[in-house]
Structures are given as C-alpha cells and as structure tokens.
Length: 195
Image (tube, rainbow, N blue to C red; front, side, top):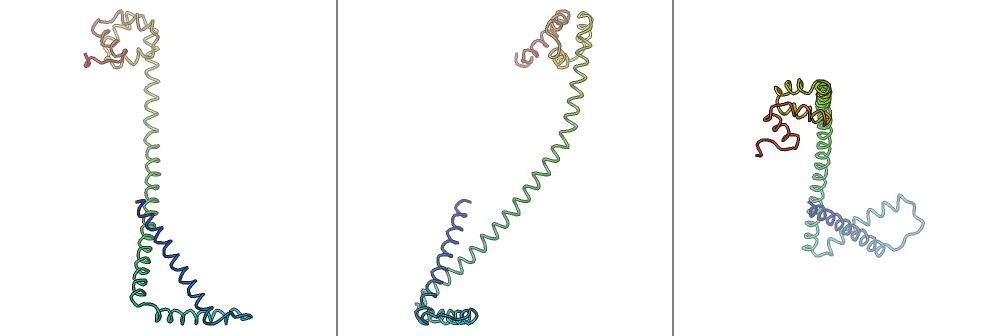
C-alpha cells in the first residue's frame, strides 16, 4: 500500500516536471521566434500567445524525432491513465473509510444500548446479594449454617465474600465438613476440579 502511494506521488511529480519543462521550452521558443513584445494589451497578447503556442507545438512536433514524440505521448497517456486510476482508488478509499466510520458509530450505539440493561441487572443482582448477606450476618450462626448448607457453593461463596470474616468463620464452623471445605476452596480461589 505504501509503495503504491509513493509510486503515485512520483508519477505526479514527474508529470508536473515534464509539464513545467514543456512550458519553459514553449516560452523559450516563443521568445526566440517573436522577440520581446512591449506595450500590448492583454487580449491581443493572449491571442498571440495561443497562436504562437499552437504553432510552436507544431514546430516542435515537426522538429522532434517522431519516435521520441510518440514515446513521450505514450508515457504521458500512461501517466494520465495512472493518475485517473489513483484518483479513483483514493475516492474508493474515502468512501470505504466513511462507511467504516459509520459502522463503528452504529456498533458503539448498539454497545451502549446493550450495556445499559446488563449494568442494571448486575447492579440489581449485587443489591440483592448485599441484602441477603446482611440477612445471614444478622442470624444465629447455627441457623445460618443450616440454611446455607442447602444452597449451592457458588452462591454461598459470593455471600461469604461480602460478609465479615468473623461471621463467616462462625457459620463455616457449623456447616457440614464437605460443604465447608468446598466453599473454603472457592474462597481461596481454587475449584474442586483442580484437585
């Protein structure tokens, strides 16, 4: 992609340089043939310049090597064609970039729409979990252990992660040893499957 960009730039530079050389050559030949003209009005000067330029081009064509002239015309045609192709590709890239930016905008809007309900649900779940942890914290540890023994380990682990350590220790001491061991492993960060 970078190589194409440099090629396009070099082609444009070469085309501009060639055009500038042609203008200088035309001006030099025009001045040589007609001499310096002073005090002419702009309209007649422009008219003479066009005629001189046209006749000069004819003179150059007649004096120039036909093969070289043909080669130059071929090169210029190829340069013009290449420039047209590059301009079309640039336009295509601009359209593609605009399309991509529009899709990114749409995806961001969709992401915001989807994140709203998810965040709300998480917030509600955390609020319920906080409330439940408060309920079990205020209970007698023996009674809390009996109820928590019947819940799944994941839920109990989430509740214990919120509760104070002293309260968790009293409840764990009153739970079944297997359940207490599984929950302890989860609190420590390891699942039963690892053992």
